[in-house]
Every structure is written in structure tokens, then in C-alpha cells.
Image 1 (cartoon, helix red, strand yellow):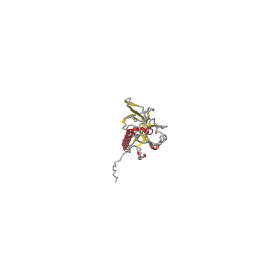
Image 2 (cartoon, one colour; image 1 turned 90 degrees about the vertical axis):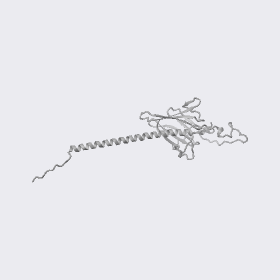
Image 3 (cartoon, one colour; image 1 turned 135 degrees about the vertical axis):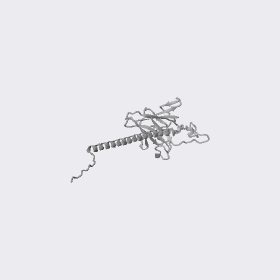
Image 4 (cartoon, helix red, strand yellow; image 1 turned 120 degrees about the vertical axis):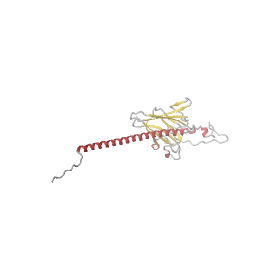
Amino acid sequence: MRARRTNTGAFTLVEVLLAIAILALIMTAIYASWTSILRGSKAGLDAAAQVQRERVARQTVETALSASLLFQENVRYYAFLADTTDERFAMLSFVAKLPDSFPGSGLFLNEPVRRVTFGVEPSGNGGGVLTLRQHSILATTNVADDAFRITLASNVLAFGLEFWETNLNDFSSEWIASNSLPKLVRVTIGFGDASSGAAGHLVSSVVSLAAHAVPREVQIPNVPQGGGTPPGGAPVRIGVTINTTVPGQPGGGKP
């Protein structure tokens, strides 16, 4: 008696290889899509972070300028100093009464009035790093103290300053009157990656300084402009001379 032969279905070797190839193509497409999504997400996050850093840097400079103050009686402590000799990177140092939300305020408890200095330090990619340094008014600034140094923005291509000249009725790139405050300051910051060769972009804003330099006769109203004895009183002794240097200006001295 012969055994009956049954036909069992099976895949041939060619069909198995073809199925594996199709599966590999599908997995490759899924991985490529996933990689593209990750790259796009990273690029978007980097761009958003860069825009946020640029906004914070610009806002920090504007906030400090709008809170600036100057007393002509103690101009050696309150001098408004600007160095624009470098065509790319300027330097600005002044005294301001800063809010609690200002960067670095936690380092200066109960000391809202302090000197701030904005400058650009060179970086390895051909650009610069915009930094903020803060000091107490009576502290000397000829000693570098990185404890009070804050990096505001990297990839800075330019940091320019222009000051409103009332005599010219226009902006000027120089400000030599360290015993007074300008009415307007135009701040221009250029951002971009110098190493990539791509074109950067400029962000410019005009800041109005609400404060004015306080004259000596207003700060000490009982003392005449030329000194001497006030009417009906004895000579007035004004404070004590402190032997220190002007923050940001070597040598110090009296106005």
C-alpha cells in the first residue's frame, strides 16, 4: 500500500531573501526619517537658544543703560566710560541702580548700585564673547575677578556704541565727557559664526537714559558752588577722601 504524499506550502530561498531585502528597506526608511526628525529638532532648539541668548544680551545692555546714574560730586566713582577705538568691539563702563532681576544680582545682596562693564573678549573661532563684569562702586577694577564675570553671548562679530551729541544733533561714535550722561545710546550687536563663513546679522536698538548727571549743588545744597561757609553757619566738612582708583580708569583722581 503506497503512502499518500501531501503537498506542504513553503517559501523558497529566493522569496526569503526578497522578504529580508524589503524589510531592510523599510527599516532603513524608518531610521532615515527618525534621524531627519532628530536633526531638525536639534537645529530648531539650537536656533531658539541662540535667539534667546541674543535677546537676553541685548536686554541686559538696555536695562543697565536705562538704570544708569551719575553724581558729579563723586565723579571719580560714577564716571561714564566708553572706549570705541576698536572698530569692531567697543567697551562701556558705568554705574547703575540695577533691579533684582538683573543678571548677577545674587552676588551683590543689598547692593543695587554698582559698576557694570560690558566688553568683548576674543574667542578661538574668530569672533568674540560678550561679557558683563560687575563691581562695587568703591572696589578697584584693575584686578580681574572672574567671580563677577558673566558671559552674555557667544559668536559676537561686532559690538558698537554711538552716543547722541546735542551739539551735532546726531549720533557720534565717541563719548569723552565722562562726567556726564548721554541722552541716547545706540547699541549695535552683530551675531554670527565667523568660522563657518556664513553672513551674520546685526541687532540695533536706541536706549534713552532716563537719568541725568546730578550737579554738585543739588547733591549738597547747603554748600555754595565755590565752597565756603553757608549763610548763618560754620564751615561744612564734606566726607572723607578715600584713596582708590576710578573703576575702569587707571590713576583715579579728582574731577
